[in-house]
Each structure stands twice: as structure tokens, then as C-alpha cells.
Amino acid sequence: MTISKNPLVFRISLISGLLVLWALVYSVLKRFSEYLTYSAFHLASGTHIGDALAFFLYETPKVIMLLTLIVFGIGVVRSFFTPEKTRAMLAGKKTFVGNILAALLGVVTPFCSCSAVPLFIGFVQAGVPLGVTFSFLISAPMINEIALVLLFGLFGWKVAALYLGTGLAIALVAGIVIGKLRMEKHVEGWVYDMRMNGGAQASQKLTWTDRIDYGRQAVKDIVVKVWPYIVAGILVGAAIHGWVPAGLMAKIMGAHAWWSVPLAVAIGIPMYSNAAGIIPIVEALLSKGAALGTVLAFMMSVIGLSLPEMVILRKVLKPTLIAVFIAVVGVGILCVGFLFNLVL
Image 1 (cartoon, rainbow, N blue to C red):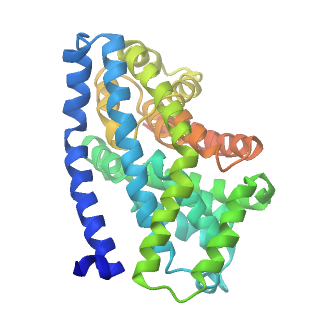
Image 2: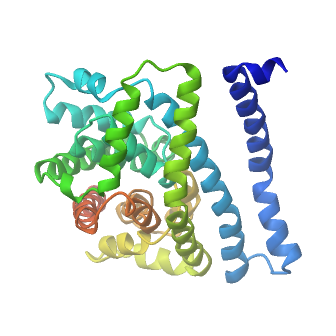
């Protein structure tokens, strides 16, 4: 009775219960997807259709659940920051400095494709320049601490440092180029509409009850808009996941011909994974004799230029800006691949 009379206590109690339920459901997603695939549907493990279906049944609820949690959290956090405050923080700093800070922040920030849209909207609503926003969105998935640790363990600190440096360089240069092109008009109009509405609300004095409601509204506004794109992207990833043979890829990427790097990037773009998910593939490819630069270009393309992420970003970006984003980042990844193959 007391809880129902106190809006804040009621919301905290409800959120706590939902978080417990979220954690319980999330913990059994893997086993449940495998049960449906291999027991209920009687598909054999290791087959193309079996692996693809298990991937889809696991990744779809997982990504949507993570998206919901991330959007809610970002919505609450965003209620503390008005565009005016953000602009004040960046006041006196040149765009170049903003790109550096955004790229460095992306390295230590957990990121996956599912959070691309809420992060992008949050940056735009906060008044962060478009080029700076892209520096963050590029560095966050591409430069991953798991990948750095693996490279350090396999090849030493010099290779790990070279990977870190080149990844930051891609994020920095790509963000600056996109910023210089002034492509704000190629962002979907509804994003700026949300920016105006969000700015008006954030400028008021908000209570914790208001902030929680702000996060809930963010989930309603964003998740409802993007979930079909997420499902479509995972469908593409599941198909590639089930039917792309690792042996063939290792053979192609093991060649030191000039075309091996661009071919590896072209193969990696349609795939769906994060750095943690792609590491086992990277290890397998390297163990079969694939060239390091080619494999790293493949890994960067999977986690930095994945087709599912482009499908998701299409909800907030117009095709022209997506094409520029792919072109600039793609050239950077190619340079990294060629550089590693040349040096090592």
C-alpha cells in the first residue's frame, strides 16, 4: 500500500523486479535456443541449418533485451545532461580535440551493434558534432580490449600497440572527414525532432521519478522503431554464420596477394558479431596460416562495418551518409590490413 502511494518507490520496486526477471531470462537464452533447435526441431548440431537457426533464436531475444536495457539506462543518464551543458564542456575545444576524446572514450566503452542507434541519438540530442559522434561510434566496436589482450598474448605489445594506434587513427580521421563534409542534413529528420523534444524536457528540473519515466519513454520511442531492423540484420548474420566455411576463408585470407585484404573485408562486412564473438574465428584462421593483416582487416570489418549494424543505423542515417561512413572506414581498414602484412 505504501509503495503504491510513493511513485519513486513504486518505480524502483518495479524496475528491480523486472531486472531480476531480465537476468533470469537472459541466463537461459542460450540453453533454450539450443533446446528448441536440436531437441524440439530435431536438427543436428553442426549442420548449416541447425547452426543458423540456433544463432538466430539466441541472438534475436538477446540483442533486443540488451537494446532495451541499454536504451533505458542511456535515457536516464541523458536526463542529467542538457545540450547546453554538453556544449559548455566542449567550449573552447577544437573539433580535432573532440574527435580525440571521443575516440579514446570509445575504447573503454562497452559497445555492440544493438546500441548504435541509442548512442547516436544520445550524442545528437546532447549537441555533439556529427564528426565527433562518428569517431566514438567507430572506435567503440573496433578497438576492443579483448582483441588487444589476444594480440598482446600472441604477438607481443608492439603488435597490440600498432593495432590500437591504427584503430584510433581510423576513428579519428574518419570522424574529422565526416565532420568536414557537413553531412548533418543526411541524418533522418525524426532524430532532430527527438532532439528538440528531449532538450525541452531535460532543461526542466527533473526528479528521479521524471528521470525513470524519461528512460521508459526512450525505450518506447527507440526500441519500437528499430526492432524490425535488428531482426533483419540478425537474419543476415545467421545465414552467413551457418553457411560460410571457415576452411575456405582461411585459405583465401592466407594468401599474401594484394587482393586478399579487400576480399577479407568484403567477406567480413555481411557477418554479425562483436569482438568477443569473432575472436575464436580469428584464432582459428591464424592457426591455419592466414596472414595477420588480412585477419585483422577481416575482424575490423566484422565489428566495425557489419551489415547488420548498417541496417540498424539506416533508421537514423540516410543512405548517402551511410555510404560515406562505409567508404571512409573501409579505406582505413584496408590501410591497416596492408600495413600489418607489410610490416610482419
